[in-house]
Length: 148
Image (cartoon, rainbow, N blue to C red):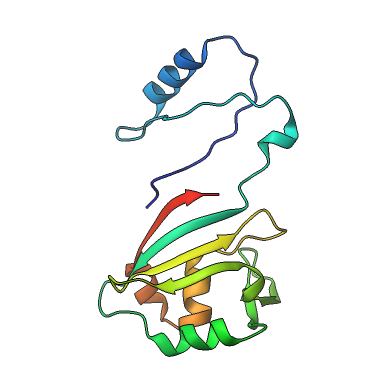
């Protein structure tokens, strides 16, 4: 689930900003709306966000504090990661997690650094840090709140 997505489009400015937003919104599936349109003057301005904020809630139960505390206290949190192509590599999860806490609603607030060679998915962090089974992760409500 996402409350904020970013799309980069390269096109000649044929229409006004308002008209581009309206045309794109009209072409999107029902429920999706373009809320902002920016014109970047250079490719450097189109660089992806530095980090992404998520809020995660398990379908049943809550997050245990001891794995979180162990993660936060460690200088490095290195585990094997299998990428989408099936290649395995050691990854230091501490380098990818900018912020991690359990809020008052027993939800996990997670900020993941992006724009590096690889950006980890929230599900990977849940599995690595909390050792959650795949079924629990698939049933969790993971909401992308905003990029930074």
